[in-house]
Length: 205
Image (cartoon, rainbow, N blue to C red; front, side, top):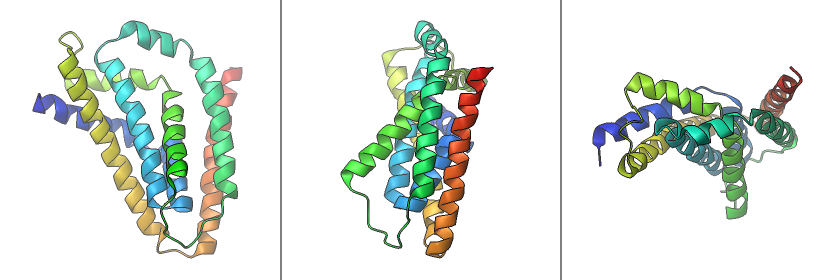
């Protein structure tokens, strides 16, 4: 395994995940309402999608990248509607003081929805391509070994960010009153739904 490629993949994955967007807000909202396990499951779903798109962008799978980015309209429609739905769910969720872990079914749903939402933004491939260029990760020398190493690095870097975010939010969650937590949930849910509406609005342009 190429250690330098792995470390570059970790840096790329962290850099892509760190900006707080709709998925970051979703992770925050789920951590607030469902606890640390829900937030981590959401983050791991996003990290998986980042790794998939990172390999597509980094290894220069041009035909697949063009096919995905060429269907942005449908991705935005589905992703926007899903964000509105999730935002409304978080706004109406009732947080509890219990720190009991969510069941496997709920965690699987959190993971799957974050995976699909992150995949619904194929423009991420463009971001990966730009960062790869900055890190000197060209696609001309790509191999299966490089692909696996790159995928592992991106996933670890992205997952590290989601771990930091989830643990930080959960620490905050345990130190505020339940009534305040309800209002924060409503605010986060409203912002997520607003992101969905904004995504749908771009379809009219």
